[in-house]
Length: 251
Image (cartoon, rainbow, N blue to C red; front, side, top):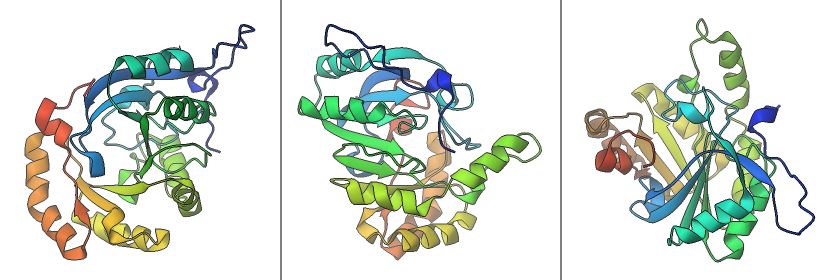
C-alpha cells in the first residue's frame, strides 16, 4: 500500500568489488540549520529523498512529492558527502524518506561513522531504521488535496495519512523521538488532541507549528497558535528556516 513507484525506489546494483552501489533517488542535499523542533538552530547536512505516498495540498517541497525530481545516488556517495559537510548532524527528509527499503542501509551507514541522524517522516511507513531522533509529522484531515482537482490522491491521502499503529512502532524502536504537527487553522486542534491521545506521547514530546511559507504568515498564525500551545502544555515550534532564508530550496 505504501510502496513507491519504481522510479523513486533505491536500486542495489551489486558491485563485486565490495563497494556499496545501492542507490536512492535524491531530490537534493545541502548544509543548513535545522529550523524546526528540538534541534532548531543545529547545523546539519540534509538528504532529501524524492517520492512520497501522500499529497498534502500545502506541501512546500513539491519537487519531492507532486513532481518528484532527482537522480539515483549511491549510499557511499551520500556517506562521503555527509563527511565532507563537516557537521555532526544529518537529517534524512523527503518526500517520504522511509519509502525506499534502502533508507535502512543509509541510516546504518551514516550512524556507523558517528553522525547523529534525524529522520523526518509522516509516520505512514513501517521501516526498521536506525536513527538518533525520529521526527514524526502526522497529517491532519485538512491536509488532504481537493477531491475535485485530485480525486485519486484525495482518496489515497485520506487512506494513508494516519496509521497510528505504524507511528507507535516507529516511536517504540527509536532512541529518541518528537511528534510535530503542522496546524493550518483552529479547526485542526481537536484532531491534534485526538492524535496525541491515541499515540500516548508525553506533552513535552509534542511540537506544534503553523502552516505557512512566509514570515508574515507564520507571525500571524503564531499570535493565536502559540497561546493555545502553551495552554495545553505542548511546545510551540516556529519554522525558523523560513525566517532565516525564506521559502527556497537548499535551506
